Length: 166
Length: 167
Image (cartoon, rainbow over all chains, first blue to last red; front, side):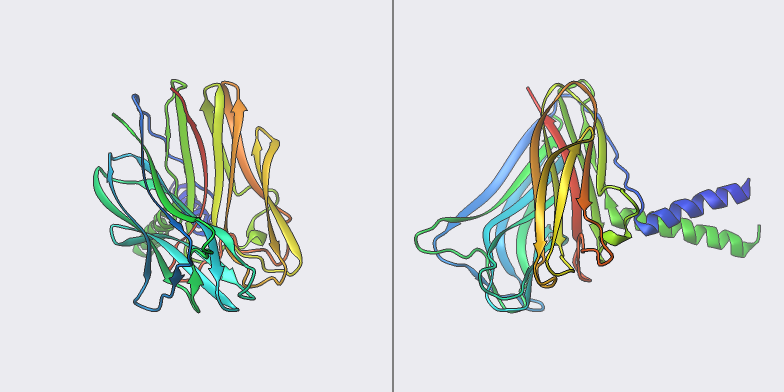
């Protein structure tokens, strides 16, 4: 019996360490509500982000009052652009001062490599006020977030969608 | 049972629990009365995951959920699709009940410095009942791409959601 238990626990541990499975937990409720919060900006000139060790750049900031539900946080930028060759940009989602997720953009040539950027995170927020920031935490050689011309309105926004009980 | 064996078991179990907690963050919400479904499946990475490490046809994500009749919004997101081969194109496809519904392509021309987040979204009409939503990447190769690539100190994500909100 002990050997069987040992093998079972060891198997679970090995699978977990190998990243072999995911667990989806489900909660049930009635009377669901959906709450939405956002901040949104339009640019007709490039916003240049240069981050270095110990210094990052605030891209979006939102104070959101959660209801204790599950949230989807999404950052979107319409034109993430490297300014020099062989560079990388890390954009991080920081909630209440804690870095919970990052997305990486690369640039080989530094020209004609503009693309939209996303960061999508799912999680739970306790009821109450939370500070949600999007920050460029590593830019290597500098990036435009977003790149924009005077004749354009390029977007950068942060949205929070929460499903919660009444 | 010797003390050493007990200690080994405790360490293995603790390591497994720690790895599960730090790697996977799966949360979800289902209203079983058929009004809404809201399932998230999210994996967190502190080191790169290479697609070549996936076994056989195992998908990136698979979610089974009971839905009401109507439109379901499905999305898949990865914080950094990192091509590692030159002149290579990958497709990530969303399947609903085994039928390919939507795909997104990611190219690698040089095979380096071409990183970027990838997002697929698709709305699909479904009948009432249990449905299976799957995300898979093709082709797999010896020099598998990073999905996601991430550096120490950063938290990479790979997630899938199935949402149905009505009424």
